[in-house]
Image (tube, rainbow, N blue to C red; front, side):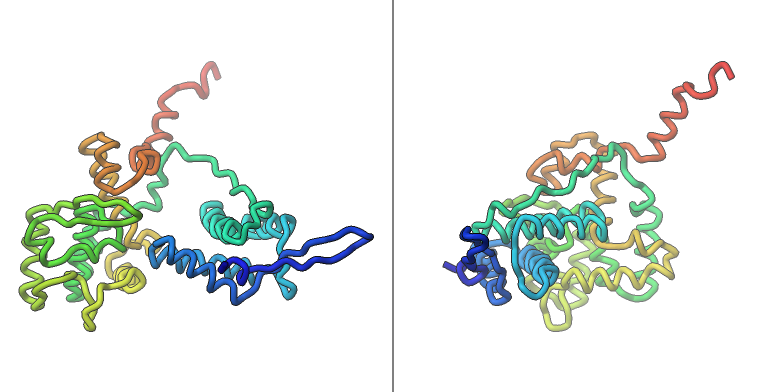
Length: 302
């Protein structure tokens, strides 16, 4: 089994007792990668799990010994150096690796996260800022990015799903999107469909994905992220707000403000659970602050 190459157990005797030491091998991380591929995980998921597994491997030091105490120490290290969400994401990858090795007794609980009941609007992209980014892309003659941002924000697709926006799909006015083991239909608004068809005609794209590089491959998220960041200064938008997912976020918030239907929004976004969608339905921190101020419970009888 691949797991045998990923980690092994050394048997020792200490004080007359038989001891076991679990050791993680570098070569075995490749076996873990093959396991993830066999499970049909997405390329991005495989890359992310391997990156986090290698970080854990480096933390283990020279002997690469694994026990519950060391995993707990790594958990504490992550808690001190990363935001809780990021730390939990890295811990989830380590727990998955330990499961693969059948070292379940070394797995740890994720850090506790107190759910916010409001949205942090200072991190969100506003409609006005989005429009300024579009204007900046157009003035810099980056038509591909100008149109891609509208495709993401106008449909709510994930940036990794833009490869499903093909010439054939645009002609039909909808795309069949397959992601995370689920499939959904994404519709193109009429103005977006026209823009996409005009773009394909001018660029000579007759079939396949619309947003491609010079070599004909679909653009990857790192290229899209970098191109968007270059617009920040001329658009006058905080770079901390400018990344592809915030376009999807703007779509979701705007959609819910109009429809107030969380179940339908979950379907449109491709969420398996409406719990994932609830972040878009929460009030903003400013709205909550205003509501609390209106209660009139401070300064009474002073």
